[in-house]
Image (cartoon, rainbow, N blue to C red; front, side, top):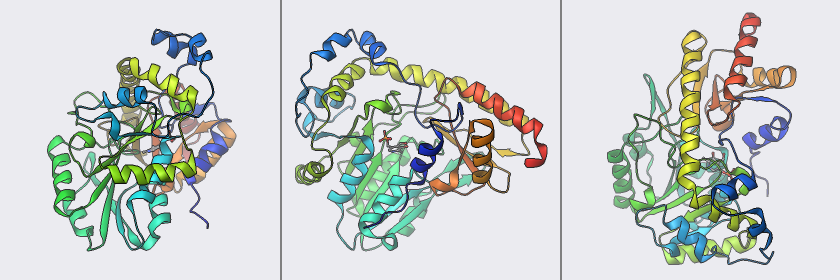
Length: 376
Ligand SMILES: Cc1ncc(COP(=O)(O)O)c(C=O)c1O
């Protein structure tokens, strides 16, 4: 059976390893294995002593405990460690849904959050809860959500902090969403891959796992902690039967987490606050650079400051961001991404604020804009 092409991943597969000036990554700057272990008071030698055996399918008790401790009120037995973060979206879709169920998904969104649910229940059963461009910010309207709920709705899919808009709801709004799900007997799938990356001036919110017992929460080490190469993700699953169904699906996809990943993930969580803070500082620095840039080009870009996360969704007044992206990637080694592939449109781009190379890449982009006024 075919599935919709995963456009974002095709795009990155094509250009990520051949363009030196990247402006659209969603992950944050990474570290070496050695640096990570040194930070955590461990050494590469310790990792070297690990035996490459099968591990426990739900994740080792030590890692599950370390993950549980990052929440206010999540016992370790609710944690399911995944083979990769993105796997959690597929497993949740399979375990939560039956034929005929309707799903509501925020849009724009990371492709998998739409495509995998459409694959499992059929495109006609997935409706889109659209972000609104609300003056200088992005917003999501709970009345828009209410209007989408049908007799068959079983699941609402959200992602906060949101990729690509950088939206984060208020604590009151978050509780209202949880109340709405409870009132209608719905499940929430909450993608919290960017959890904790909150910009100064934005009130932080708790994980939905600490707010609602109708929420299956996805998180991991790729974004907030800048460790995408570790491929460490987890789900918080509040109900035992659902957890068992989910692990049964997982037996078919990855069986158990890799030994090196578990070892390094435990180390990362020992220094999680430091890793996170370094990325928050990086994002704040890049945000200031981005704001100054967009202030210089008010006619060309429509900038809405993100509240959280490592990305922003920016209006770009060109006929096709996608066509320009191809040209910039192949001719200039500069990588921008059209937001059309995230369900927005081809006159928006996603920018990524978590990398050390951001300032230089933006400078290259600006030099090109100055040299090519006719192209815009
Ligand atoms: C919102 C969101 N969820 C899930 C993922 C998947 O994370 P990973 O690539 O680490 O599997 C991503 C990656 O970009 C993402 O942006």
